Every structure is written in C-alpha cells, then in structure tokens.
Image (tube, rainbow, N blue to C red; front, side, top):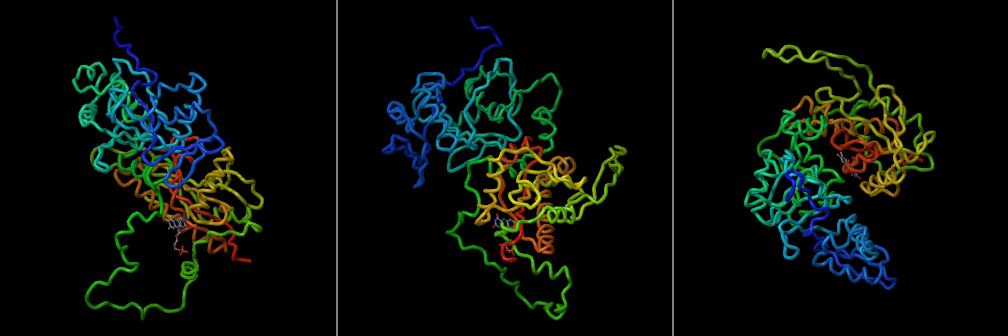
Length: 486
Ligand SMILES: Cc1cc2nc3c(=O)[nH]c(=O)nc-3n(C[C@H](O)[C@H](O)[C@H](O)COP(=O)(O)O)c2cc1C
C-alpha cells in the first residue's frame, strides 16, 4: 500500500530521451574524436571510446536519459559527458512520451546552454499553478509552451496535454489532477516546475497568485515587459539574433520617407550658417569603433566623462500625492538630479564598466557609484570579463575590444514600481537619452564611442550575482581614444 501524499517522481523519467536536433550530424575523425557538423560548421566534442561512439549513434533517434546515468558504467559516463557537451552547444532536444518509442507527447527545446531536464519531487498534496509569465502560441504549425523565466520551451505535440495544462490557470492539488482522464503525468508536471512554467503554492498564506510567485523583484514585472526584455537580448533564448537580414525577399522601406503630396513650406531660409557649439557637437558626433590601444583613455578622462554625463548632482524628496480619491498621502520618495533626463525622474540606470585598457586603472569590472562619484571593483571572473568585451568587439565588427565598455543596467523596480504597461519601454527610452549624452560628451572630449545594440543578460547576471529580473543590462556604450586622432 502507498502512503498518501508521499508519491515522488522518478529521478529520471523512463520515457525521456535525448536526441540530436534536426540539422546535426555526428562524425568521427581519424583521431577518434567525435565532431558535430551543423550546416557546415564543425564542433569538436573530444575523444571517446569505440563503445561510446557506437552508443552515440542512438542519439539520432533518441537515447533514453536513464540509459546513461553519470554514476553508471564507464561507457555510461562517457555518453553522459558527450550528451552534456552537445547540450551546452544547443545540439540536443529532449522527447517525453507515455511510451519510450514514437514521436512523443512533448519535445523540450533548451533555450539556454545550461539547461538539463530535472524532475523535482512532487507530492500528491502539492498545489500547482501556471506561472503568469507562461504562454502557448503557434510556431510553424506546432503549439509551443514558453515562458521568459524558463530555460527551455515545450513543444506540445498532443493537444490533450494543452487542454490538461489549461486547467492549471487556477491552483490544483496534484491528487485532484491525477483523478482526471487527461492527467498529463507527473514527469511532465515536474519538468514544468523545474522550468518555472508551473510553480508550487502554499494556499494557506493568503497571498495573491502574483505575490506568491517569486519575490518583490519579480512581482513588479508586467508579463509583456519581461517577455520583451528576455527575447530582445542575448542569453535567455535560442532564436536567431542581430543583423541577420531575415527578410531579404521583401524590399526594404526607403531611407527617406516619400514626401506627402501637396505644397511644402520650406524652412531653408531660416537656417543660418552661424552654428552654435551644441549644433557643432551634434554635427561632429560619429560612432567610433576602432581605438588607439597605444594611448588608451586615462583614468582622469574617464572620471571627467562620468562626472559630466552621469554623476548625481543633488537629491530631493517629495511625498507621493495619491490624489483626491480618499487614499490620502503616500510614502515619502527620494529622487536625484543628474545631467540627463529620465522618465518619472526614476533614474533606474546603473553604470557598470568593463575596463580592458585605461591608463591608471586596472583591467577589471567596476560599478560607477553615481552618488559618491567613485568606482567600486566587482570580482567578476576573467573569462566573463573577456566574454563581455569580446561580445562588444563582435557587435561592432571592430578589430579589438573597446578600451572601456559601459553597460547600462536597469534597476527595473525603480520604474515598474510606478508605471503599469509602459515601464520597460520607458527604460529603453532612458537608454536612448543616456546614449546620446555619452556620444556628445565623448565628442566634446575628443574621445570616441559607439552604442551597442545587443547584450547578454545571463552573462551579466552571473557577473554581478543578481537575479536577471532585479537588475539587468538594457544598453551598452563602447568608449576609448579614437585611433584616428594621432
Ligand atoms: C541603439 C543603437 C544601437 C547600436 N548598435 C550598434 C552595434 O551593435 N554595433 C555597431 O557597430 N554600431 C551600433 N550602433 C551605431 C550605429 O550603427 C550608428 O549610430 C549609425 O550607423 C550611424 O552612424 P554614426 O553614429 O557614425 O552617425 C548603434 C546605434 C544605436 C543608436
């Protein structure tokens, strides 16, 4: 007899298998190394025994995860290592079925290199509910279940599973779900809990569903804002990213809008040639991607640049006026004054400096304390610092990393505490404002700089050791001494 409320999931679901994604071929080279070939690109996965190579052939149709546990035979360990290496490169997906053969009910597509399917223990009395960030949509004629919080997306191949999961929009004890004819299985529920698409709640604590999921840093996020943030940056999805020209079949819109019909009022006669210093600065501004590494920017220049663009000039406070709806006065709020404008005076952008070359300042990662006008070193790993600087070099198509890479990281809650629906878009507008402030000051100081459109939010979260929804990168600016100046 089974004790009630103590049913546990199996360590590895018996019908969960790993298989190569569609375009991957495994080959063995003359030195016995396994090489994955992906659309002409080769990835060396290392040397493996003949037995492991033979077992690896099974990855085309699918190898049960339970058949190569890391604590099994030597060949099991090797196959486990191989699948882990393939997984880190995004070359495997996982199939979950009610039986160990066939197409499967669900196919799990990893979105981050570190994803590995795990099945946390679930008890019959546990109460589960869908995350408010989870959503289903049609993709290439298939139904996919995703969340900006999940490390994987779930392709739902059996529509009955979609219907069964829809019931979880309201909290459901597992024991009640098990009584349903369409119960999707404990393994799938555990995999979804692991991916934060479902979460366990304590029904006794009286919290709203929104408050019950995550902490105060998560509660302030609107659904569309977190989705936008995670899908329009690098690090949390496996979609193509950047200037890939995905719509070459369509004629691009012209660089200049075709004129409106009718007579125009010319403004030319008002434009005198006598320019102002501000107009000169705007006209002189250009993006600079190539820096003079023999004469890098100095600490004094960097200090002046930060002082003039981002330093807090003063602070002020004001009691929140909640208006005439009987709610009375709100809390006392503190604000800052800085050289650039910010939506709602939120000033949510923090500056983090990845320093490659700066005379008088050690290579490293720093936070700019805008109140104290000081740099605080952050002990990021060298590999992470290199990855961040190399990412900027790649994004600029530059010959070398920037001397200083400024990352603008938003303390999201500072804006979303106040604004519904528009918080993330306001933050991106603030980024635009600060970027132009940086461009103009760099030009004025005869330094060079360039905005960078992509950032890896996962890498940054590791570097500062913070949840990615608490404080995260929303923009970058490369800074240094232009090579052309000599
Ligand atoms: C939001 C934004 C993102 C940008 N991202 C990149 C980038 O990732 N790589 C790059 O080389 N230039 C980037 N740029 C610079 C533009 O390519 C540049 O501003 C544009 O080509 C006009 O040239 P100019 O700045 O020299 O006038 C970006 C500019 C902006 C405003």
